[in-house]
Image (tube, rainbow, N blue to C red; front, side, top):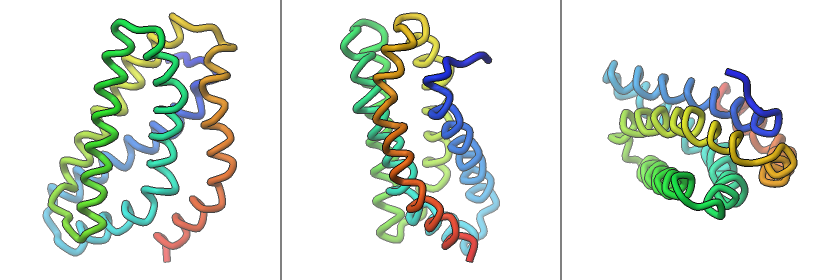
Length: 160
């Protein structure tokens, strides 16, 4: 699928989220408590530096642009915000040691990501100029640059 250059950085992160979503579902289905706990710990360590920043940049960038347009895009962004909030809730439970939501986290992350890629992004590309999308994603690009070292440290700690 051809993607607007301004949305490619978000799409690349969406690919990473789909990989994580599948891993959550696979590990949860296997039911091995130790593996479930390890993956939950990994999510807890990386959530703020990776996924929370991703959510915030969407919410303060492309969602605001889409919501200002109104109609179907505004409704869709409302749903996506609610999904971000639900993912945050599951993360908070994991942070508190409750890993029972691992499969739900994976399923929601997968459907949420596909909704952004298959529904929101095509609407954005059809409704806004490259310049408008560039402005809406500029904050994401800055945050991503600022967060690179935090993410690298988080991923390194997951591998150790």
